[in-house]
Amino acid sequence: MANICSIWLKMAFDRPHIIQIPKLSDPRGNLSFLESENHVPFIIRRAYWIYDVPGGMYRDGHAFRQQQEVIIALSGSFDVVLNDGTNEVRHHMARSYYALYVPPMTWRKIDNFSTNSVVLVLSSELYDPNDYIENFDEYLQLLKSHQLPTESSNRPHPDRYSVTTNLTSTVDDCKIIELDRHHHANGNLTVVQDDTPIPFEINRAYYIYDIPGGESRGGHAHRSLQQLIIAISGSFDVLLDDGKKQRKVTLNRPYQGLTIVPGIWRVLDNFSSGSVCLCIASQHYDESDYIREHSDFMDFRNNLTTHPNE
Image (cartoon, rainbow, N blue to C red; front, top):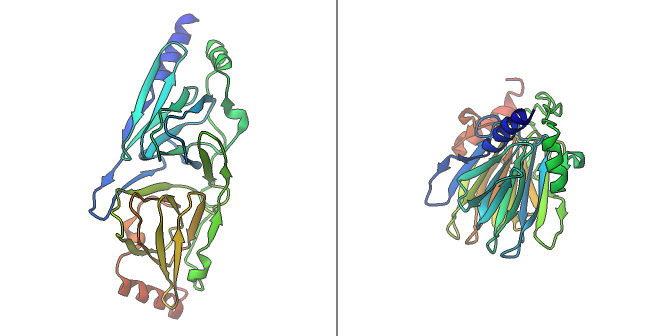
């Protein structure tokens, strides 16, 4: 029995590892992204970010019975400390193109925050307080009792949010939504998950960083992709165009997001220095879903109106 326990402990603790995320270099700001069951070995059900953390602070340790997660430094730096009850391993996170994969039943805490740090966590499960283990002694007892994590039944339904471009979609359908902000002296936390407050499943998260002040990004539309765009740090404008009407939205709060429906041309503009733009997306990357030229976008919108059944 002791051998079984030690083997399981080794398997559980050896599995955490650093994932190198794609980094698309650009003088207007670099971009990195992660996709469900591609760059991460699970379906992304929830995303949350920790910000406004005073330098040198820490976040209390806990483990999960079922939840898998990846942890990324979107800004600044911090340490993720993993403990298997015997050994402690410290991972210093300071690059936006590296993520730390943390499997279930792994005790972890985050500390050594630099000023203006932002932590992004992508999780395999919807929020469930019963999945948390918040007492280290209880965690050790669970390990000793050989209670292995079970496969989650909390899976998404691929057809639930099937979307086609709405013939009447306009820039006014792109809305600012207030996201939950959980206040804490050691850093605030905001969360979205694929049942609320966004009407789509999370299949990709990407973010733009190292953006020189005043630069522009974007300049495209999507045929079916839905998005939620958040200014994780700093501020920028989102210029929206539906072919007939234009609208400008300023994002400057990490607890506010702009939903963008399919069939809307958008440009990210007027970045402040040090800005980080996070986008939660409904689909994996698919070049055929992009409309890259504005003239093609106008043809696309006109074709929807004149040939609605095609």
